[in-house]
Length: 280
Ligand SMILES: [Zn+2]
Image (cartoon, rainbow, N blue to C red; front, top):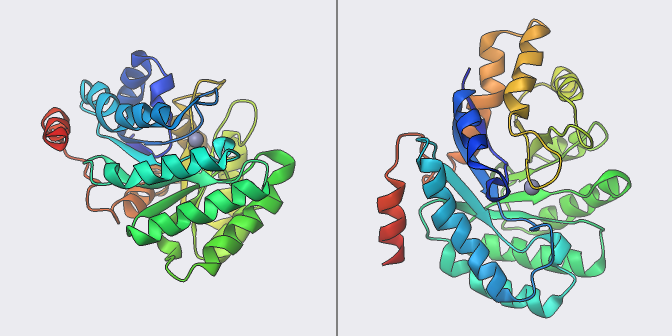
């Protein structure tokens, strides 16, 4: 089996997880910027985080021959502090040329508050201004449907947005059609306790088809499984789907979306050299 892990918060995982993912067939991992499990006390904390995502973490993954990519932004959970948000947003453009940065993400909404929407709009503008792809986080549980509608409305109201270059993540049965019908890509997140199980994910693929859908584990510092994607691929095979159909969902689809940024390459890239060159 081969697969891409398009959404994993590797900085909060142990190095053994990298070894397990590569052993299971992972060919590239992408890490969107998100909440660290605690609120950072200053913009400087985000500066250090962005350095970690664009320098240290790709080098840690490179020990296993695994290309590591990142997305940068201020996450919605820390968007309530508008002055902090402005400081962090001002810092992002300087990082966009780093060799492993694919775009702006994961931006979006958490509690659908007014400040979250304002900061989301600013980050969508930032992405358009710098011609960046976008990865969107949608709220949990009871806030999900309303939040997903709000997100789709903001994106559709921005004339600079090409839906084919935007993935809206953490879709569930009641939001996947909202996302796909508007022309965006949809991410299904596999979690042991909340979000989707392998069975629910494959049910959705059977209902809606596999076009413009990817699977991810979104593993982080909470209860999550870095091998959720290959385990779900096994569930798909168990149901009688062909090798080709599984490969399309877990490997070809993420490549199709991510390759819209020419930086995304699967070959053994000399990350050490690239990171060092970027810092000069
Ligand atoms: Zn995430």
